[in-house]
Length: 109
Image 1 (tube, rainbow, N blue to C red):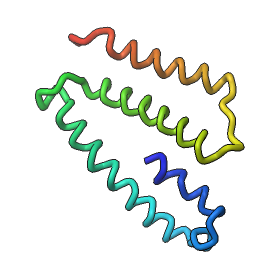
Image 2 (image 1 turned 30 degrees about the horizontal axis):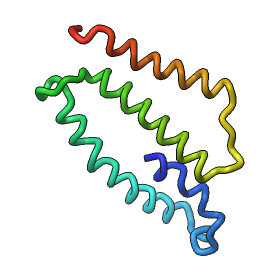
Image 3 (image 1 turned 60 degrees about the vertical axis):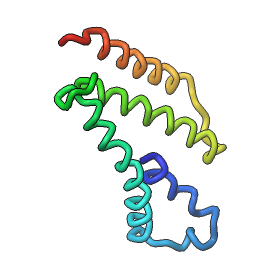
Image 4 (image 1 turned 90 degrees about the vertical axis):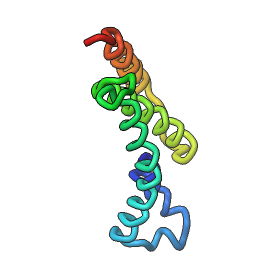
């Protein structure tokens, strides 16, 4: 989803892509997001406790958010060289990791 949501911001670097209108960008983004859904939906179905998996709905969501943030950081550092990670972003990321820890503390409830 990261590339689907933010990848088009790099299109200005490519003459053919820079001319695309918003509708074309939306279609490209939907096409890219489709491939993530191919993996995310079955992972949630298999991983959810209600279907015999090990994770609660809250645990699945918190994991998904932290994984998305990790991918976003890598994506941003590789494609947007002018963006920097500031101290407050790192602190926020630590809190998100702590959210994962806390959401997994009580596996029985």
